[in-house]
Amino acid sequence: MKKVRAKFPNAILSADVFADATMRIDVGQAGILQYLDIIMPMAYTYEPNGTTTDLKAWISTIKQEFPTKALVPILRGWSDGLPTPTPTGLISNLTSDLATVKTIESDGYAIFTYEYLLRETKNSKLSAIKAKLGY
Image 1: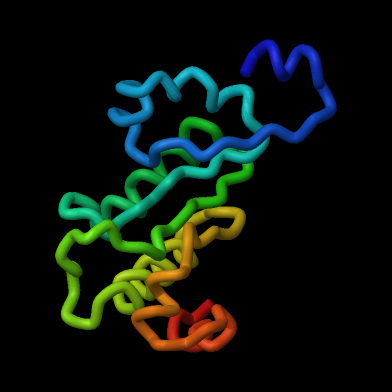
Image 2: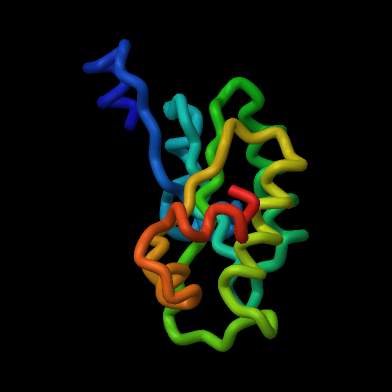
């Protein structure tokens, strides 16, 4: 990333990175955040060990360490077969994550793949579920 920044000084650099600092260190991502203009932490709480409390802590930690960087958390709109963490499934979980992101200092958010959301709501367009998500 340092070489890319040197070769293209006016380019806007962004990357999807693990939201959790330990995971970033484990996969070698920790050193690139300083070179990014936009940090996009993969804040997937639809995991057995991820919660909206974790989401808030992950984003707050990154924001404290890199206060001048734009921060766009990526929320997970898909399932890999794990049991749903709430009785109402992905919509409920993603709604909680969106509410959390709106309370922290981020520069927006992104939803990673929404096909499962469409399937869960039996709609063919993302616009059909915007109101349910508070999008």
